[in-house]
Length: 448
Image (tube, rainbow, N blue to C red; front, side):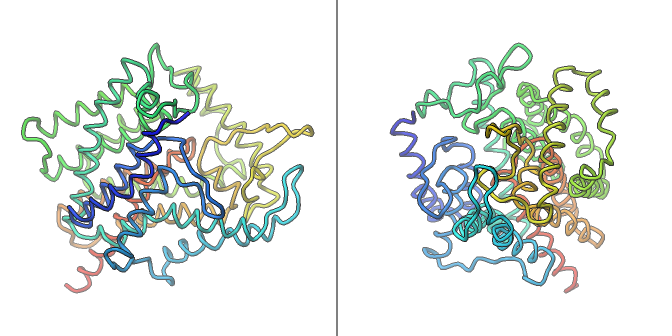
């Protein structure tokens, strides 16, 4: 059970955000409020008012930043043009649930049919989820603001690494000690290779590990543009330290991301990096169609993984089996999905849930169908495609390195959404910033 401090920190975050906007620049305040809330606020604690989604660590920082910007500071919140592809994806993300509800008004098994109330609630939830994207798009558009974002991620990651290493040694206990309850999804899941995976305040070792990947890549990006956040340690030393922290997170996929992509960031040219990012993003977008039509050599891939690590191969095989079962169910509502309340899942005749949804792509595909999937993954992929388009022109080295590096971070996150649910407010903030900076550069190139 959560203690008083957990509730105090969660609902006091609004005043923290208000202070940030009074004390720092708008860009620094946005970045710090979103990243700080994501990293510090208690996991799994929420208050669920009627109609609107639960108020928790994901929604409160975003809502606080939005309302302070709009109503305290009177700033106009910029959204993508409605006739652009990004604008269409944004509108579909918000309006799609209404069509989903119309297609799911009848009862499914023991689960009631959906109503207009569910559609409105889903619209509000989607809007809140996308707030970091809109704030990044509207306010992180200059070179200086991109630098603020990158340095903030790295500094936050360096501080967080101390907590991560503490939990590697002492087991995931910080959330319980500070907030009065274990925020993680299963203590046993955090045991790996004779030790523990840190969870800190993120609820699962996978979230921590992917955050470590993001920080590692950010460190290398800053190193490539000769920017430092420490006078005592060189950029190379920080990158080496952060890779060690990543290894201690004991997440095989994240370690592979770091081991494969770090040399590309260090030795590869920016244009090669952006090409790799585009390829990864395209694969992530087409993955559902390839799974629907059985176009992937999953058996051979599982055989290869089993040869490396039998336990990981078994886990991956189980996920593929769940995907297959869920996809068969989704075929019945392939375009707009089954909606919420567990309608996207498969049940026995006795009402027992037979499925597990690990990957975010399967969750969004099951809930909102192919159209919903494409709208969300389109919003994630378009900043990468836009950056690739901009880099064909005469772009300064600073922008080449930052655009390519941020594109790789976003592309790897898209890829990780296939096996895992690691879509966070930080992901959306990076996506919005990448799109905003790319559009700003596009304008400058036209003027020239």
